[in-house]
Image (cartoon, rainbow, N blue to C red):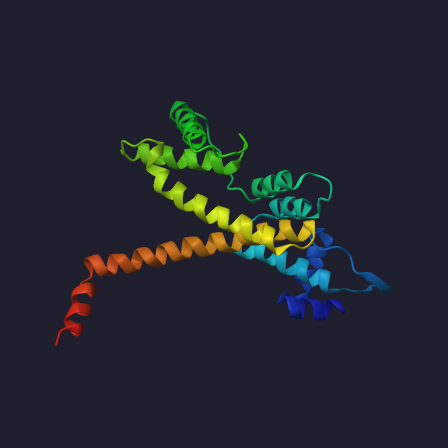
Amino acid sequence: MRISELGRRGGVPVPTVKFYLREGLLPPGEATARNQADYGEEHLRRLRLVRALLEVGGLPLASVREVLAAVDDGTTPLHQVFGRAHHALGPRTGGAAVEDVLQARRDIDAFLATRGWHVHRDAPARRALADALVALRRLGRDVDAEVFAPYAVLAESLAEREVAHIGEQGGSRADLVESMVVGTVVFEAALVALRRLAQEHHSALRWSGSRRSKRARRSP
């Protein structure tokens, strides 16, 4: 297909496709003439992945490149490739490691060890969880890392199911990594959205009178 069709099927303007090509986010097409090239289904698939990472995941270009490099990696053990992709996906954390931050990190390390989770010591999500604990404590909450225990139970059940599903899909190594990346970015966004919608729903039931109104409508 020509670049115009690639852009149309991928829902991306041609100048954007050309930008992705210049940035190395898309591999070059097969040259057919000067300033012309043909593109295949693999280009369309990669284009859609790039869009998901940029638009749904909100990743910067540098992180997208890291993720794509992990997808294309054909030599590193698969678990390490997943780790590279997760590291690129973030979240990014920063700030000075003052004492309460260091203590929170130690607490999260112990929390994860208690659960027997095999998590790299430099995993961005490990520090993000510690940052969440710091935020709670700075807001005056007298909590320890066990405050996250109910979320950990749900997260482990969900993650076990997701990883098993990816493994059952089969396909090439690149397919497996791409499925993990798409699942992390897209379904993570969906999970956040569903949680907020559910909170709004239960808030309405508890405080807006919706439950009383529903009961009244059901009454004879």
